[in-house]
Image (cartoon, rainbow, N blue to C red; front, side, top):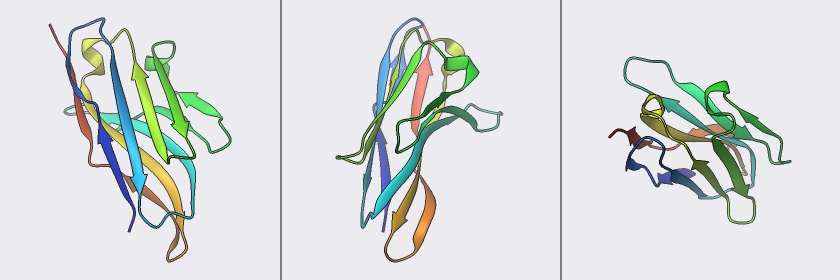
Length: 120
């Protein structure tokens, strides 16, 4: 069984920073693309950033230049450094990963989500 567990959300003032972390655990054979998505109240889930196992990175337009995604393949972890936060960044942030296991092959997995609130 594979699990993704996020941490690091919270309340921050506009202009502040937060760092989100995601740890994958279980009977993992290989992890392919990983990413962060977010969903604000009343809105669809949107891409924040993704990174392939080869290191190719893609950012959503609204976070380019402010957020940085990184992964540690040895530790099966993913991080998102968020700087210059704005109120419109307020959302539940979800970790996503395509993970291969010996038992059931490759599937997409989601974490439980972590709340980020940007407010003064």
